[in-house]
Each structure stands twice: as C-alpha cells, then as structure tokens.
Length: 199
Length: 199
DNA sequence: TCACGACTGTACCAATCGGTACATGGCGCA
DNA sequence: TGCGCCATGTACCGATTGGTACAGTCGTGA
Image 1: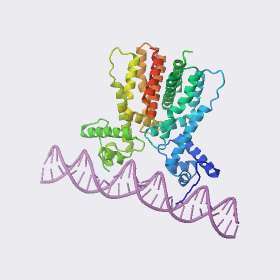
Image 2: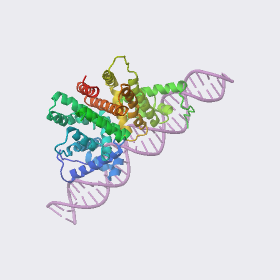
Image 3: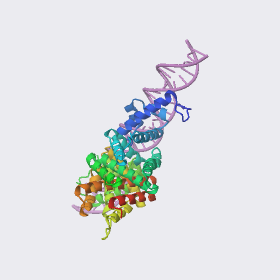
Image 4: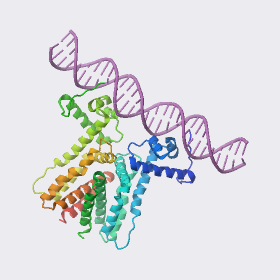
C-alpha cells in the first residue's frame, strides 16, 4: 500500500495547492476535449503529469471526475455572479446581459461540457449525479427572487423562472448545435418580448 | 478475412430483416442503459447474440452506433407524426397534446438518450455528429409551417418556432433531471399563455 | 449425395484501461 | 551526516475492449 493522506476535508499546504492546480488543468482539458472517453493516461499526458500522479492526488478516476464536475459547476455559477449590475437596467436588459455572457465563444467548451455532464448524470453516473440536484433549483432561487422583487406573485414567479431557465438552456443547445448565433439571438429577443412585454 | 457483404444500400432478404431486428433491440437496450459505456459484448449478451454477430452485421462498433443513432432519431420523429390531430383544436391544445406525448413516462429512456446523444454529438463523435444537422432545422420546418398557416409573418414565425422548440427541450431536461412533473407542467402552461395569448 | 454459401459460436489477438508495487530523488530536521 | 517523509516516475498486473481467424452447422440446389 502507498499514498496515505490523513488530511480531512480542509485543503492545506502544498498538497492542496497542487491538487487544485491539477483539477483546474483537468477541467480545461475536459472542457476542450470532452469527458466521455477521458483516460487518466491521456489526461496526464495533456497536462504534464503521469497517470500515477492523478491516482495519487485524487484516489481514483471516479473521485477525480467528481472533482471535475464540481469545479465545472462552480465555474458555471461564477458566470452569473460576475454579472456587473449597473443601476437603471430593466429586467430585460439584465437578461440580455446574462445571455451575452453565457454565449460568449470563450465559454463554448464549458457549455458543451455542461450538456455532456447532464447526459451522464441522467444515466445515474455517480460522479455526475449530484448535478441533478442543483440543476434547476439552484438557478431558480435567484430568478424567483428577482421576479418577486419586481412585484410578481410568488407562485407565478416560480413558473416564469422555470420557463426562463428552460428557454435559455434550450436556445443554448440550439446555438451549440447549429452555430447560428443570429438566428438564436433573434429567438431570444422574441422570448424577451413575450416575457417582459412588448417594450 | 470473412464476412463479405456485397449488398449495397438496399436492405434485402433475411439479412436486412435480422439486421433491423438487432438494431431495434439495441436501441431498446441503449435507451434503457445508456450509450456512453456500451460494449459490444454486453450489448450482445443483453439482446441474445454474441459480439461476433454484431460485428458481422454492422461491420464495426461505430457503424452500429451510427445505426442506433439514426433509429433513435427516427423514433423521436415518429412521436410527432403519430399525433392525432382532430379538427377544432386550438394551437395551444395541439402543443399541449404534443407535450403530453413527449413527456409520457414510457418515453423517458428515449428522451434521456436524446440528451446523451446530443452531448456526444457536440463533441464531434462521428457516429452522432449527423444529429446536429437536423437537431433544429428538421423540427423548425413543420412548426414554422403551422405558424405561417395561422397567419403569422414568416420571419417572426421562424423566431417563435425556434423559441418554442427551445422551451420544450429545456423543460424536458428539467423534467428528466428533477422529476417534478407538476412544476414543469405549470411552467409549460405559463409558456403557452405567453405564447398563444392569455386565453 | 455432395458442394457451396450464409450464419453463428469459440478462441484468440493486440491495445488500452484503472490501479499498484517498487525504486528514486529531493527536502527538512536532528 | 543520516533518517524519514513526500513527490514523482517506471514497470507491471489483471480485466476489458474492438476486431479477427477458424471451425462448425444448416438449408438449398445440382
């Protein structure tokens, strides 16, 4: 036996730092090349370590995958939290801003990874399954809060938020599949008109 | 060398029949167990043939996968074509009918497979890539036709159709992830109200 | 009856996989 | 200096993979 790591949850010292650096590189690689046929050897070769080291730092492939999924989820959420909300913006403007952030070409790999992980999670793959929990609810809360804050009925607000989330994801899948940015943007504008009134 | 098959595209005789039967069983199995970690041996054991036979009838795993994807696509489209459209139905009623068909529990495996295949296709997997071509356009045509037939401006109809398709897919993903049928149905009703007017 | 072609199973191959054992090298500390 | 700990690499293991070679079975037509 080898590789004993008595550390608990708390990341600490050089070990945790190297671990974080590896998982970051791993997410980059996975966002670019997919997670389906990932092998420890190829990943290691791509990010400059031996597959032995990946086992060393993460225990097993499955734990590494779980870490990758978690980090990818966190990155996705960061897109929302990095929104600069200047005062005086209408809800439609905020939505437009978020949409432009989500569809930035730089994030295409990450969004593809999102749908890929969804596919695995829907099959019950244990490393991706936790995603299902927050896939909807985690995003619903801020959206519902925004709607209610604007004076909407809470019950209706929940339905509207759920619909908005679904439309964004559906159009995002459309964009990734077709690459027709103009067409998808036009559909999004149509949605905003229906959603926020015919401004 | 073995297994020479001079037949062209046309399926014929017992060979084509057995082939079709095998691919049908394969799609059933894949809809139930996923396509990601499919192996010829396990698939063969599940549907009662040796993996040798699968290679014999399909040439390679990739060609079998391509056939599975094609058949799954065809089944998906059949859902739409089997819609019984009685006269006197409002567009919203037709949409509701289609939604209820798509979300029938019996089709859950097939819908999960749809998202799984999307994930693979977005990564450029050759057996799934052709899906991307028709993922949007194939569904847009009938929807646009319906909208225009109802007297809408063609340009606007295209945007509306694209939006409707996206909303359906986003809510379908929501339903598969959360299983919250009541919540998703309510969001769909909200969408129909926005889409077809506040009837 | 015999030969031939289609169908199918068994045994096998090289490649690749995740994971492990062991050796090596560098660092801090006594 | 020498001891021990951590990090890293190399070599290996058993399992599984897609694919192939070969042999056997069966029906059919001459």
